Image 1 (spheres, rainbow, N blue to C red):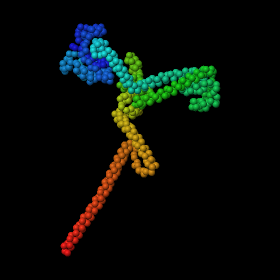
Image 2: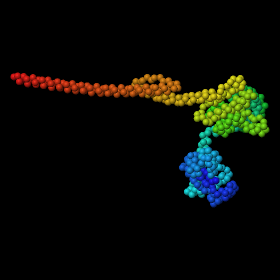
Image 3: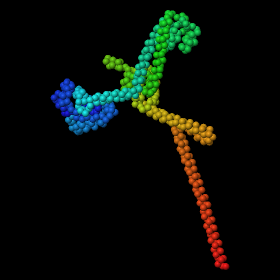
Image 4: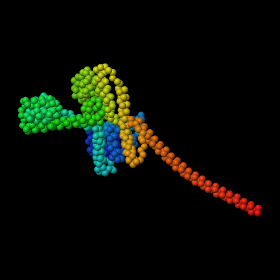
Length: 550
């Protein structure tokens, strides 16, 4: 049985025929030893066909298709043209050796060509790759390396651009940094408390918040300088006058030791750093909320920005999270407990990262597992909508959140929830209505611009003393604004046409009247001449008769 080898190079597709395999046997070690020697390998493997790529863009498209396991039309025509034809109902007398099994299965489904892959085929293709420039005689030295370098750069650039377009990487980095900042700020705040407590130990019981403690420690510095005059400043820092008085009274009777000015300066600087970190953490949280509203608005409105971002970061991307079934999403983050339970044959965990959602905490102890399963189901729906929807909207997330609330009421009070089909129908209608409203809102802005231009022109006309025409009021609400604007435009166009037609008719009538008058005058003149000539003729006849009578 003949064995063909398909090799996808940077310059094109190549098809090789491997014959005489009985001499070396189908042994991987024997093939590995014979690959390095071109004389031995060239006797076994020979080039039968080569299809070069048309351009660098074509090479990039072919490379992307091969990496995804897709057979392009060019590859299909190349194989069908150079391989023996496959007859239905009969065994084929050849095989096609390929590197990737994904594209092999696609080739077999589309063309019924038997494909084969394995260590033996990989060693043969390794030899082809090693001596490929020797098989193609028309290639100049360095052409293949340039093609490989260019294709490698373009392929990597395309992958990086594809990765950048998925902005969920920013969410993953932000949530990692947010968790790290929480740990660092907590440990640094404890260090500030411990450090400043040597000087003012009573302040720990009065001020419990870490950020506020660092702020107060920075303001006080030396407790011996506190007096009743510093109560207004402490009130501004703490926000409570009674607490400020309590701090001043505690400072007067404090048991702490005195610190040197250098130590107080270090405590002051460290407290300032903790405050700066807390402020940056707050800004980073706002950034995360804004990113989640753009990337996964439905997931964020359903389960919250922080929990949704943790789910995305644990899954690796929003696409990976959308591909996860709800059972996987339910225990996402509890993999160690799951495998420990499988090893010891104990109870598997009921929830992972979604435990941090408020819905799980609000559910009773008996219903936490049910609530986690239901919430994971809704989170998988929301993530798929966010990943594959064309436009972002929070309608589906709000409806899914309402369903979870109804399920909580069902577990607590027994109130029957709505069906998922009805809820999704309402969500789709609301999403469509919102999209229509967004489109309509864009049109009145343009109309308002035109109105402002008209007002300016009217004002200019009034200044010049020209007469102003009254405008008809137009409706602004939704579809009526469009209809009224269109009807007004049509009416104005019709008025203009009517005025133009009237002017043309009046001009034509004036011309006709002028020509008719001229014709009448001419006709009158001609009639007068004819009458005069007739009278003259009569007179001549009378004269001639009178002369004959004489």
